[in-house]
Image 1 (cartoon, rainbow, N blue to C red):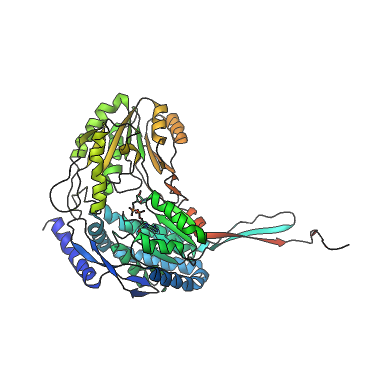
Image 2: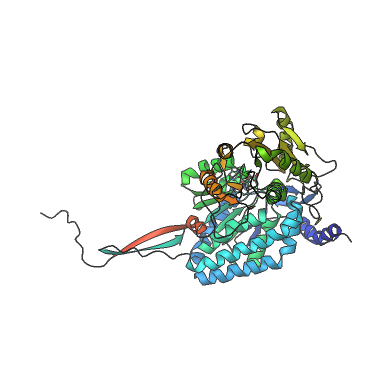
Length: 501
Ligand code: NAD
């Protein structure tokens, strides 16, 4: 049996269960159903299951459940929360294969990457579980009259809204720190890939998470998502998705003064100087745009290459890109799977004509393979200018735009001349140049001579239209918690006396 056939066989019982049960909301530990919509696989368009379509009333029930569960969860000792969250991580690891297979079928992401996504989800839980006991710790800031101390308290029930790309990993990334901080959660997963969010909440409840601490309402952004951002019991919204959706959420949350954390889009440059280790730069540039189907916020979607090496580098790139293995995402050989859905496919492929209209060259790809599924050929545009739509707009597919630059100054100018500022990648052997360039780059995260290698204690987030706020390390707790200051008089300092003659 091929690996693909054996993966399809392993997936079959999970699909049978999903089809027969559908995906209900999960509110206060109970399934809640109602109107529904069909969820399709991007691989062949087949229906995976029906999914409950959340309404304002469902969001209200979930927010109330989170509000009721909040005091007990907040007051539970951090060590007890730590134990529970480690139990969730254990259960994720035990279910890693099921999660990977389902995520692959639901999103079109190749199984070779999804196997690791499940384990990274467990790692997210462990990282924040270990920090739960110290989450409330503060500082001692004495003055001459007061012993000032600070402490942190969880902000309250929070809303988490996630996108369809790598939904499992991203859900854990937002929910684990919220729970570790002592917040309760209402999660609204993306409508296009709801399967593993359901597996995740089932896993968490089976691992012992009390009912109501984590609730999930499925459905669309314009109804369930919007209602969540407007609900008065929800104190903060952690959102991952498009920049324009972030702007809408900020407006929707304004009347209830929502604290918002935004992880948004990107049009990230990989800057290759002529003194770089070119074979490694080539590997990294390819990996950072063609892995995860290019549906990755941190993807290096603009290649800025120095003129002196551009011809050779682009030729080698085109040769490699043309050889990327496109196919069924459950085949372990597959490097590029289908895009999430038809609308997104139409958006990505619309840039093929735009590229040539604007005067760029399609060096490879630019085609749609025959057959079912939302596949596109891995695509490379060369001869591009930074003012073209293919250089300015987030395409969010396996599509790379190559732009040439003359010198360091021009590289920086091009790199920064986009609305976004999420990540940047710099390839040079010259350490002083690397320091100058990283200093000048407008990006929240920069890697030098490396692809994106995530280290959980470091801050994750973007500048400009790429986001507000940071995740990772203690930054996540800063978002999910409130600071409190308490001043204790240490003596009888002079208090101004009013109303005495
Ligand atoms: P999207 O903004 O369309 O949707 C994201 C989520 O928001 C979905 O759950 C959706 O239902 C919900 N939503 C939509 N409208 C809403 C509204 N008015 N109120 C409340 N919720 C609403 O994004 P997408 O297409 O699912 O995901 C792709 C985008 O996500 C890309 O732009 C990508 O760069 C970005 N992303 C960013 C990061 C990061 O860390 N910066 C990570 C992953 C993805």
